[in-house]
Length: 372
Ligand code: GAL
Image (cartoon, rainbow, N blue to C red; front, side, top):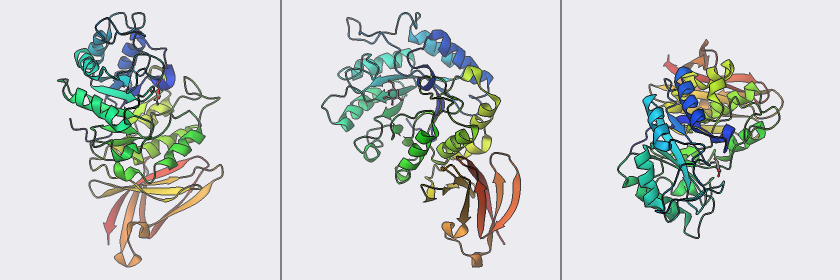
C-alpha cells in the first residue's frame, strides 16, 4: 500500500480516552464532514485504546465493548465509510494495550483478519506490555499479518521513538511511526517535541512519515491531556505550523463537534495544508534551535516554505539569509513572499528576510523565487 502524503484525520485519545462510544464516533464522522475537514484532507477517523471487551472470545478473537459499541465495530465502520471517511482502530505489540485491554501479541493474524472484516483502513499499533521479542520484529509480525489480510490497512507504528525506530520503521512496512512520547496540551510539550526531531526528519518521507504525535490545537485545557488553560492561540499556530513544516501526520485531537472558529480556520489553512501535503515530502532544514529558529522546506512548483519560530517568552527578531539557500547577492535572486496566516502578499525581498515574532508564536511564508 502506497501512502505518499502525511496521513490526516482525527483520533479519539487526546480528548476522550476511554469515554468513547458509537454515538460519539458517528457524531464525529458527521462533524468532520459538516465542518469541511474531510474536504481539505482529514480523511481518517481513528478510535484509539479502550474500544474492546477486556477478554477475547472463546475463539481468541477480539470483541467490541458491548456497552460502548452495542452494534459492533462493523456497524460503526460502515457509517464512517458512508460519510466518505476512512476508519481506523488501535491495538498493541504487547499482551495488553496501554489501558489494559487485550493486545495483539501472539494473535496478530486473527486480529488482522478481524480488522479486515470490520473494514478498518488504518491501524495504530502501540507498544505497551511488550514481550521480550525484539521490538522491530514485534512490529514486523503485525506488518506481515496486515499485508496478508486481504485489505489495504495503513500501518501506524507507535513505539514513542524507542529502539531507534527511525532506522527500521520504513523497512518493517510502517507508513508512519511515532517518534516521541505523548504530547500534552502545554507549550512546553509542543516546544520539546518540535526540537526533539530536528536531526531525524531526513528519515521521513513518502510511505513512512515521522509522526510527532496527534494535534492539541483547540483543546484549551479540556479532555484527557488538557492542563489548566491549555495553550494560547499563538502557541497552537506555532504547533500546527511546525507539524506542517515537518510533514508530520495531522491527526486532530479536539472535539470536532464543537470547533471554535479560530481552530477551524487554523486546521483548514490552505497554505499550511499545502506545505504539509506537498507531493515531494522534503524534510525541512533548520537553523537555530533553543531561542529561535527558522526552517525552510522545498516545495514542488518552484516554491519554498519559510517558517520563523519563537519558542521563548520574549519577542525575538529572526533573520533568514538567502545564503541559507546557498544564494549570494550576485545571483540577483529575489523572493516574493505570501504570509500563510493572512494570505497577504508582501512583495519582493532581496538577500534576506527579517521578522519579529511574538513570544511562543510563529510567522510563515510561501516564497517564490524571481531571477532578475
Ligand atoms: C500511548 C500512546 C497514546 C495513546 C495511549 C492509549 O502509549 O502513545 O497516543 O494511544 O497509549 O493508551
